[in-house]
Image 1 (cartoon, one colour):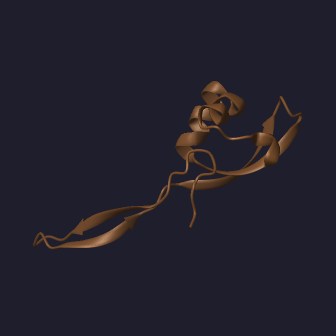
Image 2 (spheres, helix red, strand yellow):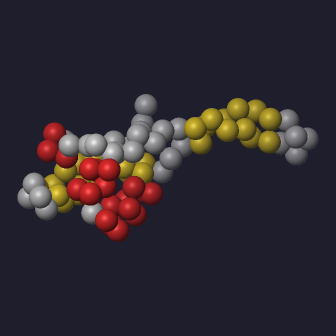
Image 3 (cartoon, rainbow, N blue to C red):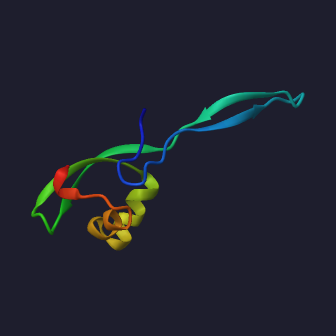
Length: 77
């Protein structure tokens, strides 16, 4: 199943509600992107699947700090 490699965000279950208020189950998928990000501490690029929310946070605080918050070792990727 597709999920973010840093935060682990996955699909969620939701309801589609019709005009007559009949609720049927459906999936809500996160916006996942495969990106090639440069890690300055390693001096190389890392290919990783992240959500767009993760990308915004990586731009703000950096990939190493963000991965450290979630206990991910970037050298193994």
